[in-house]
Length: 134
Image (cartoon, rainbow, N blue to C red; front, side, top):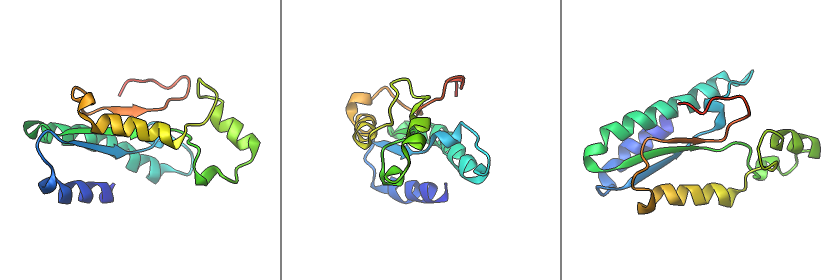
């Protein structure tokens, strides 16, 4: 959380009005997991920071959004067993892990003027039974 806060603070003077900030969080910010309380809390704090920062920057027209992907096909899963991969993919409606280019496409959209009406969102992947309400 501190790194994100300091990065936003230091970069704001460089931002043009009507710009866009897209932060990356994690599903851990809304889904508690044993043994990961500090990590989950720091990711949950990003949600609050996103909403507050969006409010603070509204007069400059700078939009602030948070993307919180779930299990994604990255190097961290390169050596994962098929059982682990299946377990991670099972709650995802399409039945497969996210792909890095899919996450990147969402970030590009949020950074572009095509998403001019989108502000203070917390896009996230949800497990069945988890409320989509912020």
